[in-house]
Length: 199
Image 1 (cartoon, rainbow, N blue to C red):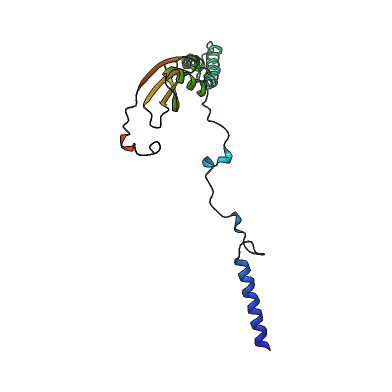
Image 2 (cartoon, rainbow, N blue to C red):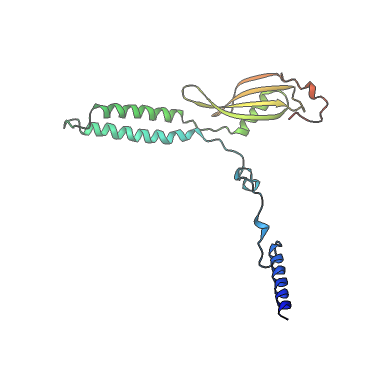
């Protein structure tokens, strides 16, 4: 009878091992958490809205810091001018003036971006004079004081756009600065048999 007992024990052990290998079985490994995972930048559930361009007015923050340091440097020089100190000298005055000039530039160049991307796109559509399909916006700056300017590239709304245009829109006031419109020079004649736009 002993051999039969050993055989029954081995059979039960094999059955338990088989159950462990089955997903979701009692006492087995749960494989539901194993699989591919998208990187955070491609996860649609993490979408928080359209991209927002940073406002140029943030330049006023370092401008305020430069102004504060400049005032401190000049005040330190002024308070120690009569005591002939070893550390504080005319360099404090020069550095303070330079910091104040730099602060003034930051305050002057810290334009408030009042025209949003969608507003600039509407101005561009009105300016080019043809129905617009695809469009893209880029933020640029012009002049010594870095006035924000939208650069809007637009294409006509055909499957293969026949016209394109570049429109410069001021970022502070909603006005068009320049418009360039031309026939689309890209040759897509070899794709005439396709049912959609080229890749």
